[in-house]
Length: 273
Image (cartoon, rainbow, N blue to C red; front, side, top):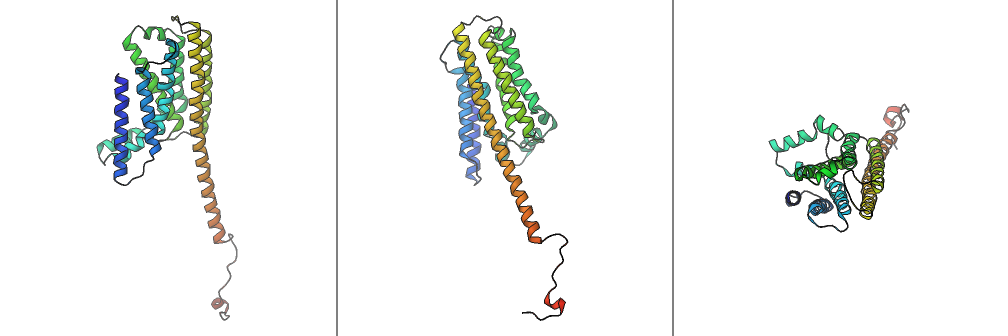
């Protein structure tokens, strides 16, 4: 219930800020509103709506929704950029900008570190007794759910890097991390297909269906992340070519370097035509 309320409050705040921008004449794409609202809906529905299948399958559906799909949709909506544009000049805006551009924030979104917190946390959750223990301790269960959502947001943020960060890690770092993280996530799903989390007693059919959902659902979200990276690469390449074209055109208009200048008729003593 707390997750759902927080998600709906975030969606309401986002849409209010976007409407404020449009009222004052600023442009803000509607597709970002749709992306954030869809992410908030997925985040709110994951723990609150009964999902089909056995308990392990339902849990994996929650994992894919709340830990992978919802974070990506929220990050692609660029909520930090919206907040910086919507907030009036003052201490709150300066504090948010300073936090985003701080050195700790730059290292926190270092792609390998974000991947370790995300998929590494999943390996700890499912390959130790933590998953079984969380079903008997409500507070531990809430903390695990919070970590999955926060780590998913951090990883999506680190890979997409859509906000005005102090240091934006290159496409090579982000693409390689995404590839290796996808492989680690797939291996974990295959291991769960064969061996349940320690201390649990899920049925074989439920376990295999949930593992397949984790495997293929994770692939879909990772493909969406890869598509976001490809769009960034295409845009960066286009800008680089455009700059190179302008530089070449300017150099051509100025003439070759070192070429002799043709004297004017006045300088050569001739009459003008």
